[in-house]
Image (tube, rainbow, N blue to C red; front, side, top):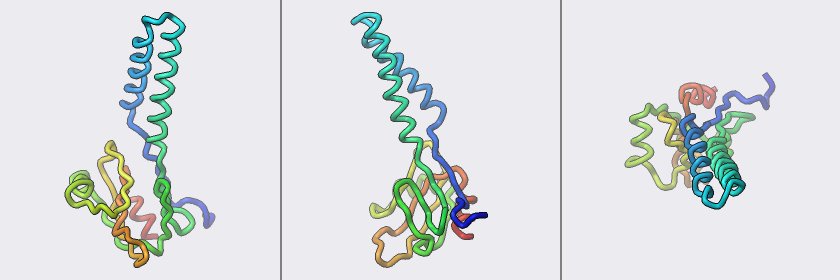
Length: 148
């Protein structure tokens, strides 16, 4: 294994139902522009579908990786040396940490369509962030990659 090869990599893609909604948004765009004629209707259909697809794709393109001594979660890059204890959260516990247990200073990479998560303490005294909350479909594998 190369030192720069990822030990863990996950892409939090949007669920299939969101792509169905994208098609329905495109259909709605076509219906809205139908009174203007056939060509505007086609433009509305294509334009609305493309816009909705770009939005769903962008929201579902966030990645979590453990690579080269760092945890990369979305736009954040944190050295593993600045991370402390890891807590695997099941669906119920993850919901609690997203709501009433949440700290406003925490870094939260959350996706509502991913029920499980990982909570990682930040031990760097210079960093005001108390912990990272990371939505993940496989929290045990991510925890193992952080511990390795």
